[in-house]
Length: 428
Image (cartoon, rainbow, N blue to C red; front, side, top):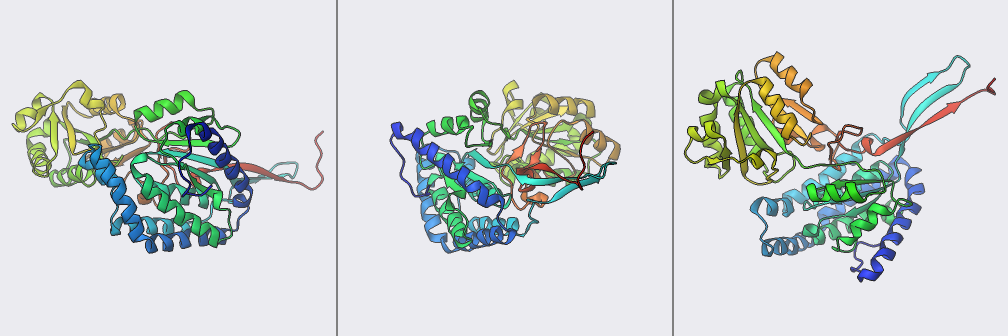
């Protein structure tokens, strides 16, 4: 199924989706048995092709940006969709980073010998067909396709309508890499329509799809949870927190907080709520607020925070559970570590949460008691990203409690099987 395929009439959509599923399933054998060198070649050629297609990719991205602007998208949302030459090069470099990773397929993770002489090994194998449903950011198209390829999985990509034109060009580049490596072009396919009904088909094609990865807002996750007949690796919203403990270094707290919110407000690792120890309000908060407000960030605070700066708007109860994905930050004063932990565990989405503290014991308690996939001490929440973990890229941040949890890279997209070797043993 080619990325340039035109959207189909509604009555043909079920057939188109099933054809994609069947083609992906047929590709899985070649992918599972592909030599590591073949996958590396496909990824490196795709990276070269992405750089070569910079101008067409920018032209396609302009179409996406124009549509998003006409639809009234926020500046932060536009930033998520936008590509420039630097970001395109970053997409290509991400594929090269994935190519350079050790091949996870066939790796033995554990091996032992039983008293009867049987040798048992646990070996990594691909999952099969992975469907990824995501919104806005076109780099996810390349990241998801590249990671699935590296891990020996076929990928069906249902990107956001906001980045549809950009994603078509990126998938064409990935398929060029597949052709160069003599791997099935249908190993990476893009759903050829913006029609949301395609999502419903993906969620119920359990004979073709082995796992679905939804990466988006509450409405998408709720729909997947209600309709899916296949297992799910959930990337929930990034309702991330930064907590400034009373022992925090003032300048460190100032720097980390600003970066955690304002580096890229529209990414899922951006801090959405800042918690500050009441004992540190006078010493730490004024400079933090000044930096954020000066940079154009809207602050919504509780009564104590409002008294610190007249520009702070009152926070509502809903603000503590809102992922803004914009230059908006809710700020609350808390009475110590216990109150901070309680707030994060109540309102957070189990994505990424950070503490800024010089007190090592307080930091260790926070790291141990916060029930999130990623917890940090003295670092920005914007490090909650697979590339920063050394995974080359990520297909999402799994916020569930069952594995895989946290950044999902190539290794996390594998399952395993047990390989048993004997010398004629029979069971009594």
